[in-house]
Length: 111
Ligand code: AMP
Ligand code: ZN
Image (cartoon, rainbow, N blue to C red; front, top):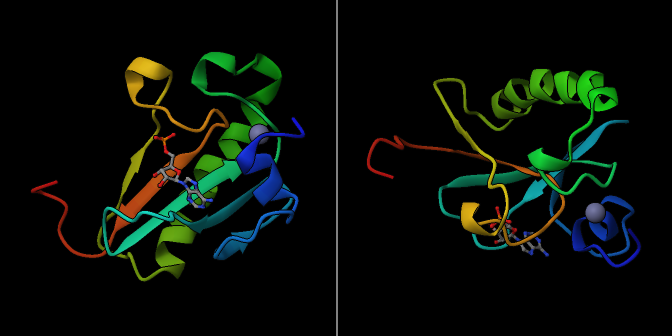
């Protein structure tokens, strides 16, 4: 998807504050953070959202899920973090490239 914002970030065509990258995914700071640490973790592959997942994406998604706690620990979030994935317009999704919000840095009980 050449005109997708997050594909452009994944390809390095648009600058982002990247904190982690591997063959499957890239993690960068949300431009409008809702918590002291607010990252977006996205697959390099353009998948719109959870509705768009296919069986062949299962291994990729499993690897990314296993990576989330590693990224969290690297960010100093050893005592907890939150992941959120908005799906579709009614789910509050604004950017239609699958992403996990990774939030933490202080208690999120009141959020
Ligand atoms: P969502 O509403 O789940 O689609 O979340 C999209 C998120 O992307 C929002 O939290 C935005 O603040 C964030 N965002 C939009 N553009 C950028 C950007 N260029 N760099 C980093 N984060 C962005
Ligand atoms: Zn994309």
